[in-house]
Amino acid sequence: MTLAASKRGDVLIHLISPLGTRSNLIAKRPRDYSRAGFNDWPFMSVHMWGEAPEGKWILEVQNEGRSIVQLKHWGLVLHGTPEQPNPTLMAVGGGSKQQASSPSEEEKEQQPEAKPSLPLPSGGVPVG
Image (cartoon, rainbow, N blue to C red; front, side, top):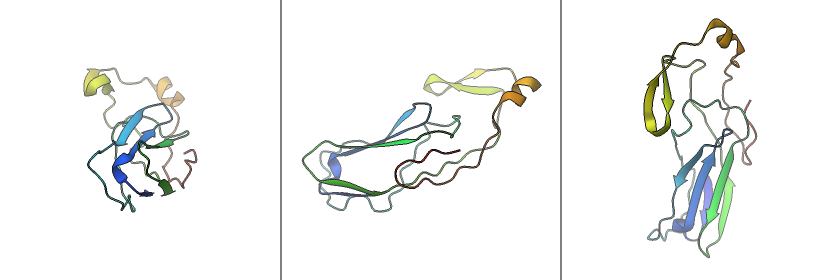
């Protein structure tokens, strides 16, 4: 991501997955007075692990101050596997694990085939 800001600490950034998971990429930092902005800055999150990547991804950039903020470029790179790595475990709220049964052959056939992810250009073009 490349973002210009006259006071970087006033910027809050969130990424929202197609399923609505909202990940805080950077919070307001009152003591960050840098004018450098973010130049090719890689933000990362694991909040969406286990979610299908297809759909509309939303990048929220909030300016909590009087500074000027300009989003110049952003992209999205997704990492994952075509199949669930451990189908006997499923994540549930708070990072705890719950035992689950393996999907039946019929359930496997109904699951959408995983597609490779591609970087998104600025503006959040849907994946898939």
